[in-house]
Every structure is written in structure tokens, then in C-alpha cells.
Image 1 (tube, rainbow, N blue to C red):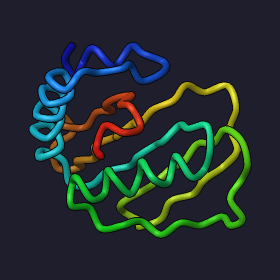
Image 2 (image 1 turned 90 degrees about the horizontal axis):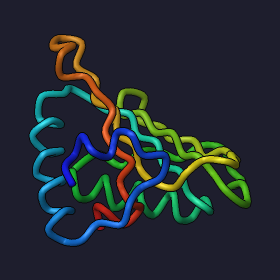
Image 3 (image 1 turned 180 degrees about the horizontal axis):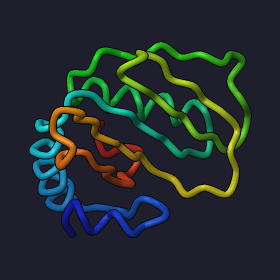
Image 4 (image 1 turned 180 degrees about the vertical axis):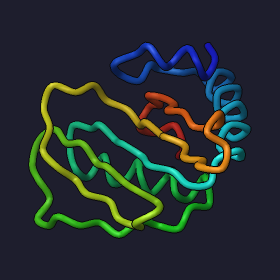
Length: 125
């Protein structure tokens, strides 16, 4: 499995360590061409979504986003984060898959812009 193989999936697949390492290396190469990012996390709970976001931020050396929208919703959620604004919002959302989506933004290089994932929630941990 490679990075582009994830594109057609509704929910993140289980990956073995070799697949994870290969996909992470491909992702890092693509991220390097972008200027900033948005991230979406689909999860069963707000706590799972936030934990996945924090692991991603740490693994990619991103400045932590500020969470808005307290109190946190119960049940299935979608977390939307934006590096440009520095904010993330968690909202109730049912019927989604589970996983992490990253969209690279590169106004000076539009060919580099893309959306990658879904990655498993523990992919960056």
C-alpha cells in the first residue's frame, strides 16, 4: 500500500509497520512542498480526535492548534484544524468514517496542493 492508495477509502485501513513507514516517508516528501495545512479528524469521540491531532502536531513539528467550541460534543465527531488561523473546532458528525485527512496548501505552487489520507488515528503516534 502506498500514499495514493488511501485516497479512495472512506475510512482509514489497518497498516502494518512497513506500510506505515513507507506511507509516512511519501507523505513527508509531499508535505515539504506545501506552505501550510488543514487537517480533518474523523473519530468516535472528541477525545480520540484531539489525541490524534496532538500526535500529528508533535510528529510533524507543527505549532499546536487552539481548540474552540467548548464544551466538547459527545459521540462521533469531525475535528477541523487550520494552520493559517491556528484554530481547530470539534463538531458532532455522524456517518463519517474514521481517520485523519491532511490538505496541503501551496498558493505559490498549486501543483503541490492535495489532500492525503485517511490515515489511522494512531498513525502519527
